[in-house]
Amino acid sequence: MRWFLYITVFASILLADHTNGANRNVVLFVTDDHSPDAGCYGNPVIQTPNLDALCRAGVRFDRAYCTTASCSASRSVILSGLHNHANGHYGHEHSYHHFRAYDSIESLPVRLSKAGYRTGRIGKLHVGPEEVFHFETALPGNARSPVEMADNCRSFLKSSDKRPFFLYFCTADPHRGAGHVPDALHNPNSFGNRPAGYPGVTEVKYKPEEVIVPPFLPDTPVCREELAQYYQSVSRVDQGLGRLVEHLKSAGVFDDTLIIFTSDHGIAFPGGKTTLYQPGMTVPLVVHGPPVTKPGSVTKIMASHVDLTPTILDFAGALEANHAFHGRSWLPVLNDEQHKEWNVTFGSHTFHEITMYYPMRVVRQGQYKLIWNLAHELPYPFASDLWEAPTWQERWSRGMGALYGKRSVRDYIHRPEFELYDLESDPDEVNNLADDVEHANRLKALKAKLQEFQKTTKDPWELKWRYE
Image (tube, rainbow, N blue to C red; front, side):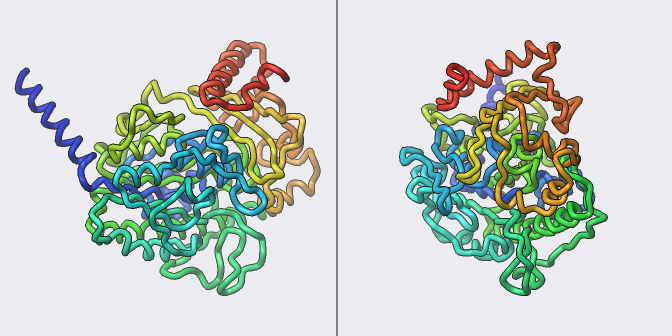
């Protein structure tokens, strides 16, 4: 027994030294408007060999969620570990939207810098102010050109600076953009694809008849065409990931680097992006590196974007007990297939663009999910890129009774105050149980859990329970 104790303690010391030693580098790779559409997530059509390889040697999360399906707002959560109602970054940072985090927020790169890290970023930042989200090095690169981005990281990865590094690598693919006609060099189509391609990329093109149409979208020719363009953009991202892995290996730091691959939120189609339905909240999350002890495993724990900052700080040995994050480190349970204490997640959305006020709060516990639409008397607002989407416009032109996926256009735009779903029997969230007397106690319990979350995280909208 004594020898067993000695061996256990010695193994713990070795593990701690490996995890918290000099080489505890971190790459946080964040794609843009990307659902878990990849080979490793069961899509047999889309080609993502580099992510699939990372997954085979790492851990795949099957229940990973953003807290708000809006670009700037979500990124502020990723980099702070706080919901938007606490960090102040309610919506888009750019142009007249001008949402920004509170000056008092101490972000992930700032905390890591204080812990002795050199911090670098490349691609899309989309949060402010700069002082709050400060990185030591801003690397140049077109965020639509992920292989070129990876090449521009070589000097950062091979630096003679012996401090561990944190690299925040953010593509603008597969985000939906302006719907102009592509030209050979400058104007990509709405998913960033252009005839001339991008440096180092072998464009992978898809036939509309080959793509897999998810149930929340209409299976129409125009939707299939858009999905084919989206797939192409995702495959371009995958080649950027592959090139970045090559450079990590060339620099001799691959084995010592924690790589986290995720997206800011789900796909940029109505019913996904800007909603707190599953297609908006569900994101890919693949983890590779020293903490992985079961390569190729799949975890069912519910992970949230608020967990990323505390997890990375934990890996860096910089997580302090007095850090008041809304999330927690999943490193201790990374290699568990599931864990009973990781079975609840919350979402908090208020804006996307400044013209899109529609606060929603959500709690999911086990198989049940409750959405509270605080502004339910308003028509559901559209992001400009989603309103212009050909897939939506084709359905909209057919009238309010037309089906958009499994909902009518009318039901998508006009929502009830509460939406309660059993995700096991109704994964597409079309059978609202909020008015079902058989679920009255469950509705009451989830309402109470949601309100308690709002109180704990100091959500200003919590007072709506009392005066409206």
